Structures are given as C-alpha cells and as structure tokens.
Length: 307
Image (cartoon, rainbow, N blue to C red):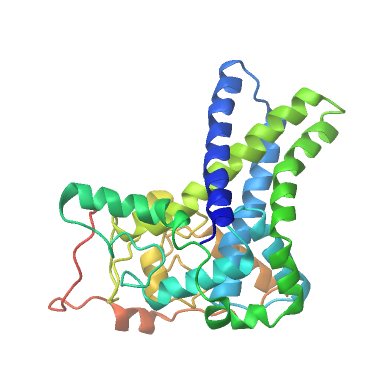
C-alpha cells in the first residue's frame, strides 16, 4: 500500500468521525431538522444500496443480471459510499471469499488472532478498521476482478472515484441549500448530517460485517469459515448481516433465507425483477438449504460468541 493510499484511508476514517462530533454539537444546539433527516435517509439508502446490491450482490457475486445503464449506476452509487473504487472493492471481496478466515483473507478477525480477550479485541479491530491501512485495495484486480477490468466504462468509473467521493460530500450541502430556498445554514447542517455522519454510519455498518459477523452471532450451515448471522445488524446493513447465510450460498441474491430474516436489499432485487430491471436472479431452494445444514457430529471451527 502506498503512502498516498494509506493517508487517503486515514482521512476517510477520521473526517467522518469528526463530522459525528460536529453533528453532536449541532444537535445539542437544536440544529437538526426534518430536511436534514430526509436528505440523510436518501443519501444513506442510495450509497448503501450501491454497496449491498451493486458492489456486493451484482458485481462481486453476479447474483442477478440487469441493464448495463443500471449496472453502472450501481457502481457509481457504491463509489459514493467512499469505501474505495469499484474494482478494488470487488477484488478485495472476492479474495475474502477465496481465503475466508484463512491466511490471505484481507480482513479476517481470526488469521492473526492471539489467545484470550486481547487477541479477540485485536482481531476485531483489524477486521473492522486496521486492515484499511494494510491490505485494503491490494488484491490483484486482474486476478480477482478481470471481468470488471475488461469493461472500459467500469474502468472509467473506477478512475473517477476521487471525483465521486467529492460529489458524495458536496451533494448533501447542495440539496440542503436548494431545498431550503437558499439557506446557507441548511447547506451546512445537511453537509454534516447527510454528508459526514452518513458516511461514518455506512462505513461502520459495512465494516461490522467484516468484524462482528465473523465473531459474534449464530450459525446453522456447514461452512469452513467462521461467518455468523447477527440479527440486530440486519436492517442498518440492508440485509448484509445474514452473513453466515451468504457464506453458505455466496451467489444467492437473498441473504435472508427465512421469512423473519429481514433483507431489504433482497426485497429491492425482488421488486426489480417484477418490473423487468433484474433477471437470472439466483435463489436457494429449501432442498439445498437442508443439504448444507450442520450435522450433529460434524467438526466445527471455533464457536463464535452467541448474540
């Protein structure tokens, strides 16, 4: 990792955190209104869906097919989450599945884990944030994301990441100014809440899948890694927290496999299919689920901590 890449990741971690502190000050002084929340919700959903449906289920795992224009729109939305460029993100995640919780996994909490509480906390830190300064964006794109590298428009979107990151920060302020009728204070509060705070929350919810969903939670399928399902993260992660289900069936468009496993990203893909925006949607039959269930006497990896 170059010094520029490492410094960029430091800025991406520290600046949104500073925004959260600023937001706390603004809230203390009652500078938070319905317009801020509306812009926040819109930007959160747009960028988080760019990650969950776009980067993850569509581009990484090919869980469904869609029109080229929508494919590129998802890629743009994902880059506006400020989690890295699309090709780097996909390459990292495919490498994660190739070496899940083994040497070579870019962000496993278990690979370099020491014993005891200190080791668990150290592993959680590395999987959540520490890996950003060591292995983030370092997976070979030609090996793990050759299909995206071969797409000239996707390469342009990949190179446009710095500009899309800037747009992601400025757009909330522009919307706050325009929708308030020209208030600079509305532009400032929208920038803080729908810009910095939104980025902070999208980041930490996503990184929690890397960390929490490989240590705490529940399991029911026979998989070689230590992935888990964490129910309380399901809604903020738009369904990504059914991570153990995902590792059992990586190509499934739906991570929530039971009726009570809330999966907004899966619901969106289902709705897209109804109106002709998605097709070849990969699903898991009940028979396949039963085949992967843990057997009573099957050897298990170290047991994650229950919810």
